Image 1 (tube, rainbow over the protein chains, first blue to last red):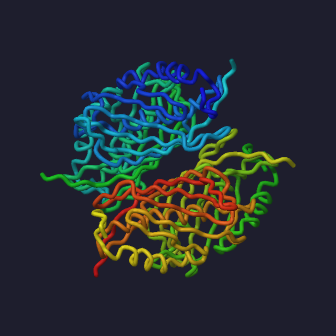
Image 2 (image 1 turned 135 degrees about the vertical axis):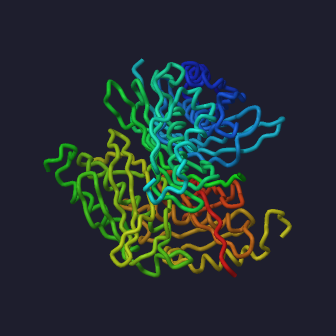
Image 3 (image 1 turned 180 degrees about the horizontal axis):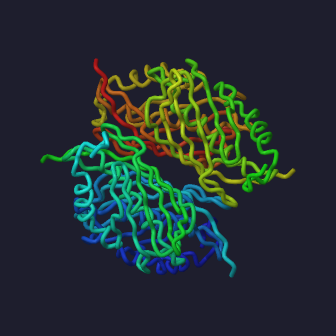
Length: 147
Length: 147
Length: 147
Length: 147
């Protein structure tokens, strides 16, 4: 709680609670690996159910965990009672997502009152070696919910 | 086969064969609804396994079927022996993806020698009514494979 | 003023007044060709000052008029006293922008309370023939100004 | 020339020569501030001719110099006789581009055989203080020209 940008001391519980409600994340076998102020990591181990036609991770998996990592990194900096919606994102697929695991690292580039801009980088881990396989820039919007 | 842009008379079989190898599409319960020259539709029925934290379709599902619909629309116009890789895509999420079914319609905006640009629009179908919930523009690259 | 989406009967004057204050548009020689509810066209004639290294229109010109056409198409549907900021945009350059004139056509895809999503298509006109040379999707945000 | 990624010892002359042919860059008053392997900086001083309706730098200027900085950063790593085309780019405008000068810093994220992916960050400099006002991710394509 020493980070001045943090407005909700329970940010980690909020992120983990929201993540647990995302049916897709558990269907993909994804889990949260790290939650810090302005930074969230999500990873997913390889399964045949996650592939494209060549047997590598499908771009849809890469994108889904990058989107969630970006959105939750924005949420770590928001006040209690806020939620985050993805307005849009763009992803460049840099290399084949080949390996035993994918890791998406999302971080906040700019945290505004309504709009936050986040960057998400995805790495494929094969025998402990990381390959940078995608980079995303995402626009997130704060939404207030009644308590 | 009267469409002059078609260079492979077996384009539909090629698309369906490749789709069948995508583990993720079957894991999501997605299926190809339509294959025409320069146009492919993919749909996915609602399941709890596909949701975000509010119980609507997750943006990752919307994106995965839009990406596949765009890539396969590009593939319909390619010569035999080609494959398609997603270079990048950008998606704007326009409305909550709420309904019993999502449909992604991909179409080729420009088919070049190396690069094709495609647009994908996703609709959420609730009680037969379509809501336009996302629009994607994607850059696809042709890759040649040895026969 | 029969269009139900229009909330400011003076939308055309608002758009033209704002455009006239954009130093860059006049520096590029751009002008507004059309203002309709949810639709704005901006065009710019060829000059050597607008080129990239091969003598065609620079992507920066294509982008600048597409961005303005998108933003002003969003503004046509806003209440009096609003302004529009570009949150982000993405543009695919489809063909060389070669010709005596560029035309950007912006239209609103979705007009929300805070966020509008617009599409802008740019055409290069050579001897009266239009070539589709770029397509943009832009996220615009409403900003309220005190009267 | 000790950088192993450099394939043309004259990369700086190539970049500066190409830049000098871009009519738009001189029309905007932009100049190259730095050329390193995989990294190019372009800056432009404030003029009324470069503004949007509130008197700040227009997003079109921000974008034009970011696009050029990205493209030329890719060109620094290419073999002699190559040129670079922008396939697409996406830019998020993070803050008002207010100041006496804009600086765009482009760098190569991934340099492939055909496709390079670059990131460009733009800073507005006001009284020596830099504000991060935009971030771009761009896809560049190598084009070979006959000698």
